[in-house]
Length: 260
Image (cartoon, rainbow, N blue to C red):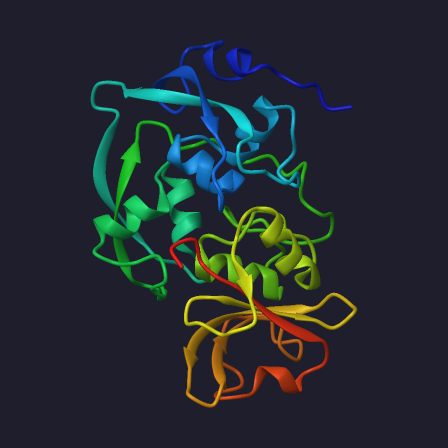
């Protein structure tokens, strides 16, 4: 059994994580929160956050729940400076932000982008480099036999991987695609039947299901999406152009972004 550590022993035993001094604090979970968003807001790793609260990243968070976090981070002298990073194939804002100990919203703002913008290989971003980058997350919670990328909690090439990568706000572990709408609703996300740009479309076909990121909606209820693992093609693309989502097997629902 994996040994559990208290917040103090995890964060304050040495007094330092990634060149920053931390003090313990409490945070009350809000609707739409996830381990990754809370961890990013407090400059923690989501695995450390989960373990500090004797949880795993697979556990559901409920509005009103109180978590122990590391707050009031104080940077060591000359601990950070701006530098550049060249986007690699498969990168996402959340993955790059996690690599440099940043919040993805801060990263987007620093580069005059929004979190929904696509990144292109070779694109140069401004990042804030800390004296020591955030420790690499343990792979203890990952499914064996799959490849993962930093900041994304779903196997590379799966539809769930693509959607968390594209949105930046999809939950850390909502299970198979068919379960996403139910688990998102349990975390306080608004779920409905009308397509909206920026929402996640969910097909519950009785099996694993499928999810995609909605990029366009027209007056006839047709949509365009970005997705992966469509017909076995495990990279992100617009494979279908305009199509009617209800013609596919299973019920269709939409998870709306936190700002909706």
